[in-house]
Image (cartoon, rainbow, N blue to C red; front, side):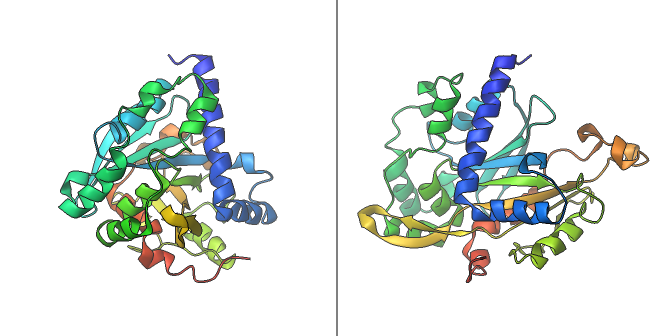
Length: 308
């Protein structure tokens, strides 16, 4: 049983993540504003966050085994493992200690499978981490954890190193610059008002409002059982400063959307009676594989003009 104090600390950590994420990803405020204007919600707090996601480097002292310790401390439970052979990634998802809290998805790059040159570039930065940074945290201090999740773990990369990594792994390039920065949060769609409570309908709403969607594998990513449907915006381009003062536009973070349909044994229940445990749980590797590409150049190239 997780103590009330730890749950309060967790809520503060999650609030800090979302506050900074919203500041850095203008699409979040714009999507919320569009939802309020259409009467889907009255205020931002009504949005149900399906899950948040982090990207990590699979190297000693870092990666999933380090970062997950923060959330395990707050009562999250590690669940299914996922493997992405082509992208050289592993991942786990974590169930929250309370059903109103977001799930967490943490992925990790299998650095050892990259070319020797890419491994050397990554190692030149991550070797600056001499011990597991989570060891140095007081996990019951929300401000300390919040600061950690937003601070640099290694020196600012050079544009040359970033570009070389991007040639081989756009995921690696994203992490070498963004570190543990929140990769995305996810709007739960199925509990929205009728007419907007399916991914197809909500995607149409987003496109009417000018948002660019990731169409890798199709705009709607569907699990084989047909019960988990996901979509996402294309990551916004941010003005990033690299070592030596060079500035370039690179992929930042994005917003995801999820529709979880009822399990067969609960399909007879009216919508108002459906709770989280009645719906499809977990994730789907095939869906996630294409969602990752929301930060990839083939998708971000679509953001040639900024939303006004």
